[in-house]
Amino acid sequence: MTTLDPPKRKPGPVDFLELDALLSDEERLVQQTVRGFVQSRILPNIASWFEEGHVPKELGKELGALGLLGMHLTGYGCAGSSAVAYGLACLELEAGDSGVRSFASVQGSLAMFALHRWGSESQKTQWLPRMASGEAIGCFGLTEADFGSDPSGMRTTARRDGADWLLSGSKMWITNGGIADLAVVWAQTEGGIRGFCVPADTRGFSANAIHRKLSLRASVTSELIFDECRLPADAIFPDVIGLRGPLACLNEARYGIVWGAMGAARSCYETALDYAKARRQFDKPIAAFQLTQQKLVDMLLELNKGTLLALHIGRMKDRGRALPQHVSFGKLNNVREALDIARQARSILGANGVTLEYPVIRHMNNLESVLTYEGTSEVHTLIVGESITGSAAFA
Ligand code: TGC
Ligand code: FAD
Image 1 (cartoon, protein in one colour):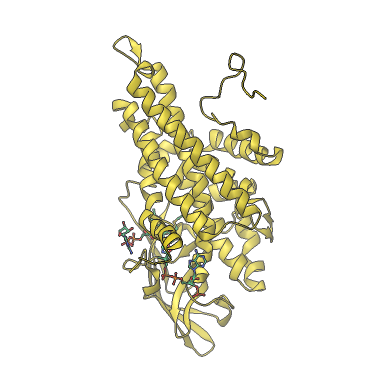
Image 2 (cartoon, helix red, strand yellow; image 1 turned 180 degrees about the vertical axis):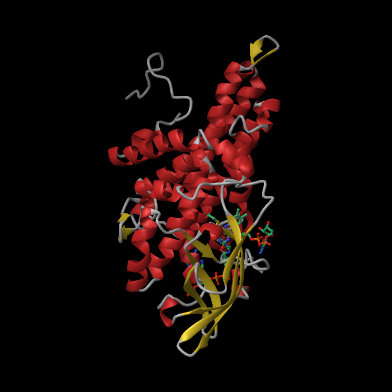
C-alpha cells in the first residue's frame, strides 16, 4: 500500500512529522489555550521583563485561573490533567520564556507536588487550594551554596526544641524564593533528611534576591536564610525520610522540562526560519544558501525528534511506566538539543541575533540555566550511565 501522495501533500515546516495528529482533542485544547495565553500576555511583555529582571507576581493568579498550577495533581482544587496535557502546557509556556515555565514548574511540580505526595492532610488542605489558584506562591529549597549536584551533604538543620522544630541554615538559587508565601525546605535532622513547610512570615525567615543574572531574568531567584526559625511539630512532612523525598519531586519538574525545552527550541527555530526567508544577502534570501538550509534542517530534525521523545515519555508516564531514568534521558537530550538549536538560530540571525528584539538570545541564555538546574547534564548522563552499566559514577 502506498502511503504518500507527494504532489498534494507537503510536510509542515515546523510540525514536520505531524505529531499534532497524535494528540487527543482535549490535549490539543490545552495546548491551544496555553499558546493563546502566551501570545496575548507573555510575548508582548517578556523582552521588557527580561531586560528589567522582573516578573509580575500576579502572573501566579493568571496561571492559576487557567488551571495550570499543579494541573497534573488531583483534588484540592487541582485540574487532574494527564501527564501529556501537563507537558504540552510546559512546552507552550516555555515557548514564551523558560522563566514562566519555571514559575509553573516550581509551584506545581516541586512545592505543590511535595505537599500532595508527602504532606499531612492538614498541610494539603491548608495550602494546596490556595496554591492551585495562585493566591499563595510556593518555593522549593533543596540546593545550598556548597551542595548543588550532591544535596546529600546539606548543612541546613532542623532540631527538636520541646515539641517544636528549630530550623537553621540557608538555601541558594531558589526560584520564587522572594515572592513565596510558603517554602518547602529540606533539612538534616537527627533521623535523616526531612521536609518542612515554612510559611514566609515565620520569624527568622528571610529571602535575598540574587542579582546580576544573565539567564532566567524574568524569574525571581533567591537565597533563603533560616535563623533559628521556630516551627510547630506539624510543620514536618510526616512519612518521608531521606533524599527520596525531594528527588521524587524532581522527577515531576524534570519531566516538565523535557517538554518545555522543546517550546524554547520551537520558538528559536520558527524565528530563524522566518528570518532566513526574509533576510537577503548576495541578492538572495539567506534561506536559499545551502549552509543555512543545513542549519535549519538540523534544527528541524532535533525539534521533531525531541518533541516525539517528550510525547513518548508522557504516554509512558500516563500509563505509569515512566521511570526516573527515562525522565533523565529526556531532560539530558532535549535541553542539550534545545540549546544547540538556540545557538544555531542565533547565528542565522546574525547581528540581530544578539538583541532582545528577537526571542532567540533570551531563550539561549535561559537554556544555560535549564541545562544546570534540575540536575546538570553531567548528572543525568551519570544517571543513565549507571542504569546501563550497573556502576554508579557519581563519586
Ligand atoms: P541515591 O543514593 O542514588 O538515592 C538516595 C535515595 O533517593 C532515591 N532516589 C530517588 N527517588 C525518587 N526519584 C529519583 N529520581 C531518585 N533518585 C534516587 C533512592 O532510591 C534512595 O532512596 P532510599 O529509600 O534507598 O534512601 O542518591 P545520591 O546521593 O547518590 O544522589 C544521586 C543524584 C546525584 C542523582 C542526586 O543527588 C541528584 O539528582 N542530584 C541533582 C540535584 C538536583 O537535581 N537538584 C535540583 C534542585 S531543584 C531545582 O533545580 C529547581 S530549578 C527550577 C525549575 O525547576 O524550574
Ligand atoms: P555543582 O554541583 O557545583 O556542579 C558544577 C559542575 O560540576 C557541573 O558541570 C556539574 O555537572 C559538575 N559535576 C558535579 N558533580 C559531578 C560528578 N559527580 N561528575 C561529573 N560532573 C559533576 N535549586 C533548588 O533547590 N530550588 C530551586 O528552585 C532552584 N532554582 C534554580 C534556578 C536557577 C536559575 C538556577 C541556575 C539554579 C536553581 N537551583 C535551584 C539550583 C540548581 O538545582 C543547581 O544549580 C544544580 O543542581 C547544580 O548545582 P551547582 O550549581 O551547585 O553546581
